[in-house]
Image (cartoon, rainbow, N blue to C red; front, side, top):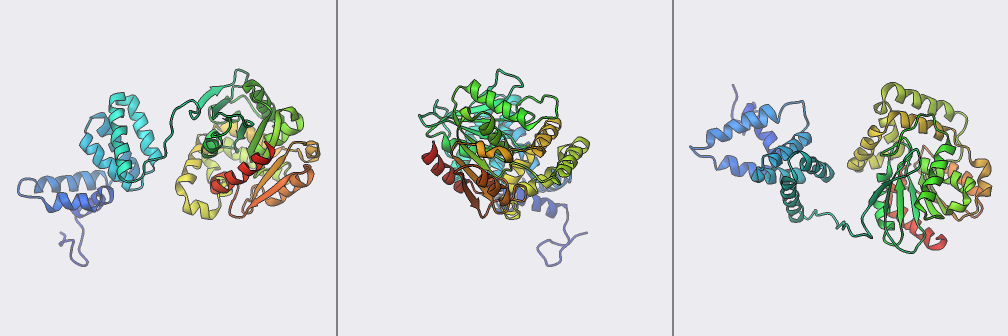
Length: 411
């Protein structure tokens, strides 16, 4: 037996527990309006849904509230219950559900509920975002802006995304181990204002093929060379981070005619001998336990503690990408990364080179960048004080500013 819940020390009954969930999901204003205006006709109904819908269902431990919110959006979309959809969509947005997850729910609904339902759902969502002052920046599909996705004709096939126009030297963006071309979304859009930009997935990653491993660093460099030749826009500015920077070094050493300028971010030209055992352990862990076995340690290396605490959505997105990475492809690329060895040949690099390091980067410490800068003639070295391994994610504005300044001078 319970006592009224508005008294100090009161015991909660199922109505009280449901009311808490109802408030957490829909907000106090809506719930107060529904509960406080109950009358002889609908009071029992309000009690029913509060106890059984909001406690027995929303209070079940099997799914978190975000997942339940998204399911409700999909279900109300499929049933064309637009008043209910709008209510829950507004509550989800106000409740901090990532807009990317809402978008993906509506995209899924476009297939399983139909395009007319998706049209209405997207319109209502845009209206809510506009009302809340959260409408994203325009992303027109005009020829100069639209992102076009391609695959190479040559094998193994590589997925590439191309955007932008203009007479400036084209740029190729090359991602880190375990991620994909979407690592560069923000920077690519900014660069595309003045030049063509190509991003691609390394073999074993994203939408690219996964040939049988192990891979060598030369394999990844050969992929990059044929990609540029097939694109037909070389020589290019190569911007590579981590594994992408290793590929960029090899490209400048082995195919200098394809590289007009080089940007090496958070990368290494050679690891100490002790690192071989670390990479071997990582390969073994992935082969035994899948990507879940290493994803948490990867996030700790890729992002500083402060960034992980302050930007959980960005970290969650990167984590999800790593978990989607093909296990065999990751392990094969891991072996290529562990065996990187360009240090003794960097003195042959003749193109303008910018090296970016993160002071908080334990995966590619500043000393590794200094070693490259000492060997590449005329190389510039910039250290970001507040960045770990994925400097373009942790310090996007600083990364873009430094890069744009370099491009003005070199390309």
